[in-house]
Image (cartoon, rainbow, N blue to C red):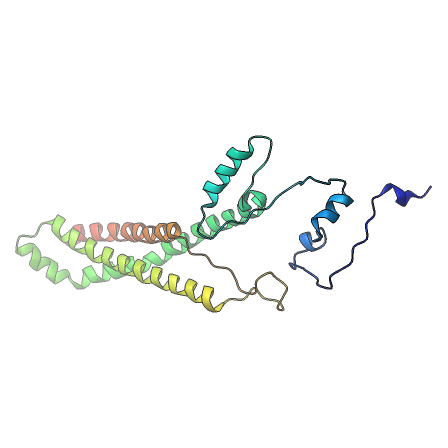
Length: 228
C-alpha cells in the first residue's frame, strides 16, 4: 500500500508572486491559496474555520466587537487584534510600564538641578527676603513666593519637554528618523513605529509637574525657616 494515499493531494500552480512578511513564524507556517482549494484539501467544503473582518477607519473597534459577539452568540469566538496576539501585546505593555518607571527615576535624579537652582536663588535673594520680612511679610508668604518660583520652573520644563517630545514623534512618523536596522525588507516596516496617545501625554506631563513640585517643596520650606 502506498502511504501517500492516506493524504489528500491537490495540484496548485504558483502565480509567480511570493508574499512574505519577513517573520519566520508566519512565512514558514502559512500560505495563501484560493478558498475552494483549501476547503477541498482539508475536507471542509462549504465551511470556514475563521473569518477576518476589516473595519472602516471611522469605525469603533470595541463597539463592532461587542455587536459581533452579541450576534454570533457563545458558539463562536470573536477576537480583536490585541486578543489574537495577546502575548506580544502583554510584552509591549510591560516594556512600556518599565520604560515609564525608568524615565521617572531619571527625572528624580534630574530634579536635583531644580533643588540646586531654588537653593541658589533663595541664597542670592537673602537680602530681599530680609526686606520683605521688614515690610511685614510672614514666613508663609515668603515660602509661597519661592514655591511658586520653583513650580514655574517645573511647569516650563514640563511644557517644553512635552512639546519637544511631540515634535520628535511627529518627525519620526513623517520622516522615519530612527530605522529598525538591517537591510531593507527584513521587516514589514523599515522605520521604528511611533504612536501618540493623549492619555500617555497627560500622564507624563503631570508626572513631571508632581515630581518637580515635590523637589521644590523641601528646599523652599527648609531655607525659608533657616533664613527667618
